[in-house]
Image 1 (cartoon, rainbow, N blue to C red):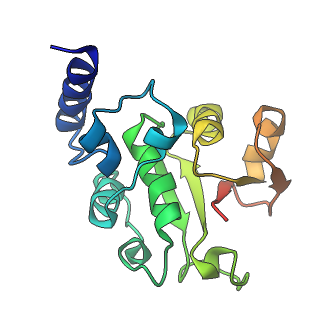
Image 2 (image 1 turned 180 degrees about the vertical axis):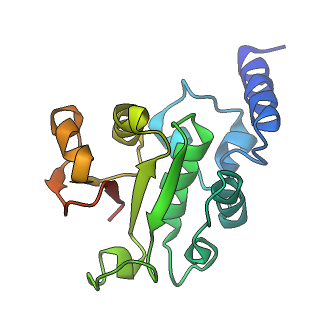
Length: 171
């Protein structure tokens, strides 16, 4: 049995054990694992699967995840990557229709951004590190207590408001 098949089988067992119902579509087709190229890691995640992962975290999953008009596929892929590649437990605090301000076609209201926060405050740095590694994320905003971790952000970034969250953009 090849290393790729064994690796994919091991990933499948982890997904089954954690209640996750799927890997990125291209990983399933190619046997990609976490050590593969960024292109394989970016994946093409199913909206329903990512929505299910968000729901399994115990918080209300934004219904915007299910609508291509509300959430761009690249943002679904970024969130799926975080859920599928062992980011610490996090919640989505805002996508599109639930974002408190209108921020234009390339922001939340265009379906390109999400606000997240770690379930446990001790996981803030780990969440930022996973966001740094996410090949889909192009910009990071730090709000509230996350501003203390600015020196750890390796992607283009900005300081957001004082509410504790990490803003991710895929535009």
